[in-house]
Each structure stands twice: as C-alpha cells, then as structure tokens.
Image 1 (cartoon, rainbow, N blue to C red):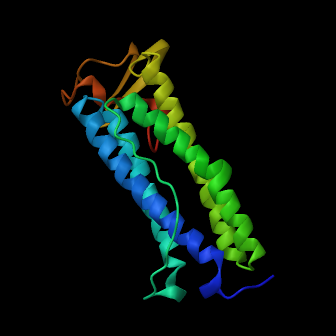
Image 2 (cartoon, helix red, strand yellow):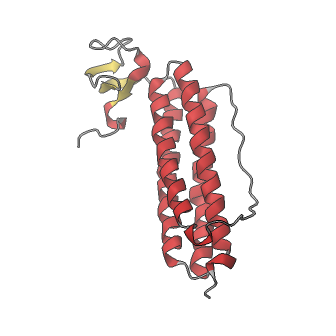
Length: 199
C-alpha cells in the first residue's frame, strides 16, 4: 500500500526518532560530564563518541522530513529521564535504551515505512537499528568492566593506550599516570577497545 508522505505514520515516526536521538545525544553529553568529574575520561570519551553518532542519526531522520518543512507535527512518545548519581547507572541505562531502539522501536518503524511504500526510509531505520545494537553492546562492555573493577585492570598483560597522547603501555594494570603526558589513569583504554586501533 502506498500513502502520501504528508499523511503517513512514517513522518510521525521520523520525528519521534529525531526527538529520541536528539535527547540521547544530550543525555550522553551530560553523562560524559559526570564521567569526567569522576576522573573516568575513558567513559567520558565513550559517551561523547556515541553522542556524536546520535547527532548524525538525528540529522539523517530530520533530513527525511524535508517534504513537510514548515509544518508542525504532533507526536506522542515516552522518553527516559536519566539523572543517575553514578556513572555505572548511566552506562546501564544507555545500554537498555539502545537495545530498545534496536530490538523494538526502529524495527517497527522500518516495517511501517515499508508497508506505507517508503522503502528507502525503511532501509534507513533498519540500518540505524543495527548501529544502536552496536551502541548497546559498547555501553554494556564498559559497564561490565566498571562493575567488575576491571576498567583499568586485566587478568593478563595487555596494551593500554593513553587517550590524551597515544602512549601505549604493556601491563596488567593501566598506569596511575601516563609516563609521557602525566595524565591520570582515567585516560587509559585497553588497546582493543580504542577507537581507530590498528588491525
């Protein structure tokens, strides 16, 4: 069945997704600030990195609303309030919310768009859904490490990279301070989890 975009549920879903991604970006930016206050710069980086990807998703969804420029569209939705006092709770909440988008929200939006005849938008929802799955996995991995007291400790010797200067240290424990730039332990990340690690 094909339906005019201006009358579609897909346009509503696009705006709901835009609102959700925009709010996620802000929540992650706020959580990054909390991580920084707790000297967990590596977690700050995870939240900031993901926030920027959420901004990119928001733009993709918003750009698809061009045919209804100038209109006000009423949407209904529920959005989380995440004012947790600790970093671990923010990681777990982010993991949950990303999995919700992946396993339910965007899959349903993709089905609706396909049914209404918007194949490209359906494909976009499906693709971004998979990215949200990756986000959830990443948040969960760092939450597990933090919860287990292994964010800066390994059972075996590994490589640690300083996110400030790039220094790599081989050890079972991340240095208390970087031997090069003197930044604190909170800047260290396991090499295999570092952005742009070599293959």
